[in-house]
Amino acid sequence: MVFLASKQWNQAYLRDNFALSIGSIMKTKQTIAIIGASGNMGSSIAKSLAKGNYRLLLHSTQKDKAADVLYTISKEHPDAEAEIMDCSTQASWEADIIIMAIPYAAEKAVAEKIREVANQKIVISIANPLNGSFSGLVTAPGISAAEELQRWLPHSKVVKAFNTTYAADFASPVIDGQQLDCFIAGNDKEALETVEELVTIAGFNPIQAGDITVSRTLENLQALLISLTIRYNYNWHAGWKILHN
Ligand SMILES: NC(=O)c1ccc[n+]([C@@H]2O[C@H](COP(=O)([O-])OP(=O)(O)OC[C@H]3O[C@@H](n4cnc5c(N)ncnc54)[C@H](OP(=O)(O)O)[C@@H]3O)[C@@H](O)[C@H]2O)c1
Image (cartoon, rainbow, N blue to C red; front, top):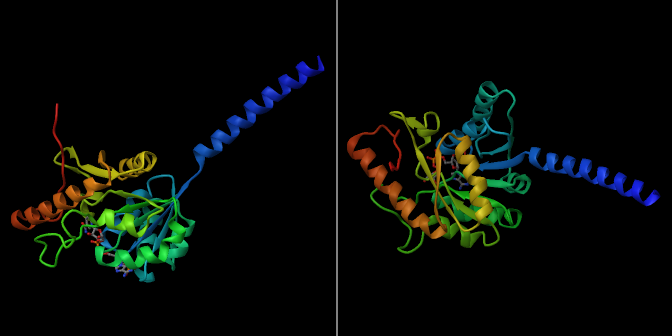
């Protein structure tokens, strides 16, 4: 009898506490570091993700510009948790997910700074490595900026995302009644699913496009959109939508 009572008590204890711990896992906020948070993309992504249940760490070398982004977030989303971080390494150390919202040319140097603290973390590559005239890419044939970033951060889970969406798209991700697609590419299944959630919160339709090598196509795809935007004057508010039945 004693054994039975104890077993019942243990079952109840396990059930209640297991439920509690599952509950707390589900409620745990993910921390996202945005490196380059005062730029066109960094600020747009930050304002967009402030809608979600995330803690945002805004890194910028220009504190006053980052303060403007933080001010807008606090006005538009009073419940959002966001703060300015002076140091990219500290921000990345505290983060679960790191978004590299910086020019391609700056990525290697930043990757070196955050390499140790970005181990096993998701790092999002949004870069389009365009040349100065926007007529092509500066990366060597057969490699993408995302794959280079993965080489520089060998123990991180690099995911390509948001490179095919313009900064202006974040304020209105629906154009002419169509929700824009946002392509995602990477090698880690769980990381892709996590990034898919971010893309959804930002208001885009996520499409998993394949492994990290697909970033070559995605970066070329955006080079094409940029050239079309210039040629046909899309006013930097355009995007991709796959129509299918
Ligand atoms: N603009 C778009 O519509 C768009 C769309 C898709 C992808 N992208 C990609 O997104 C990235 C950012 O583009 P953007 O248009 O947002 O550029 P941007 O407005 O010039 O902003 C870039 C930010 O990167 C930071 N930065 C520059 N050099 C740095 C360095 N050496 N170390 C650390 N931070 C540095 C700067 O932040 P500080 O304030 O700290 O100086 C700057 O605010 C690029 O890779 C671009 O290809 C852009």
